[in-house]
Image (cartoon, rainbow, N blue to C red; front, side, top):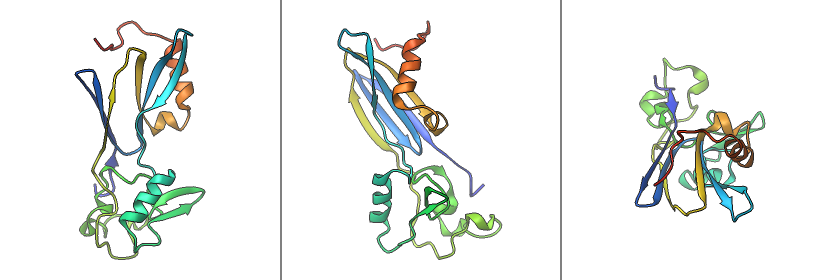
Length: 170
């Protein structure tokens, strides 16, 4: 159980403001009408906590200034400690508490050096977005979608295939 983790992405609308809490490698993208052209713009509202993003690598380096191996390029992918891509998650306690970073967990998950502070965080990033009349829809998805579709392609698909019964803001 120490090596099991998940991400979380939550949105709440209150008084025409969208609040998003993101933890892990999920993302919210807004489909926004472009004037009266019938076109749609894709606006990314949240950022994943993934070591492949330069800003996340920088954040990790600032949080762990004495650890030159906090992010490692392994098989063409940036990973935290060479093991995991996300820098924030629910679970994954083997990267948060030293007492879980030992047998019986598989050696590929264990750190070779002692852990003096949590490596991963469970603190979400929270953002707000004031909803506007041209805001049409939101796409909440994990890396399983974003690995295959760009923001623009996902917005185009949703815009081109409207569904009756989809949630709408008042």
